[in-house]
Length: 92
Image (cartoon, rainbow, N blue to C red; front, top):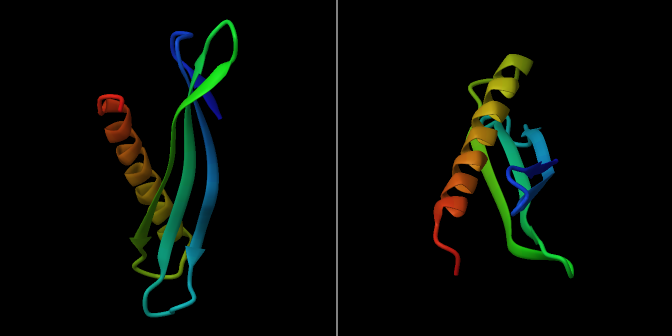
């Protein structure tokens, strides 16, 4: 996925992990991990100005598909909240 709000910078996102982890039946969880690249296009080249790998794990109340869908949604929301914090921080 590529997001280009005003042409000044682009955000490239790749989902690395998106699954339900049921290895421990007493503690199922939803897992999401994604990599985000903040890119700046200049006349000479495209530069990576930031590179973040962000993730979240959310406990699931049970093994069903509806529970997994809600858990993945919550985990993705957490990843996006982390991304918003990174984007709001002043550049290094």
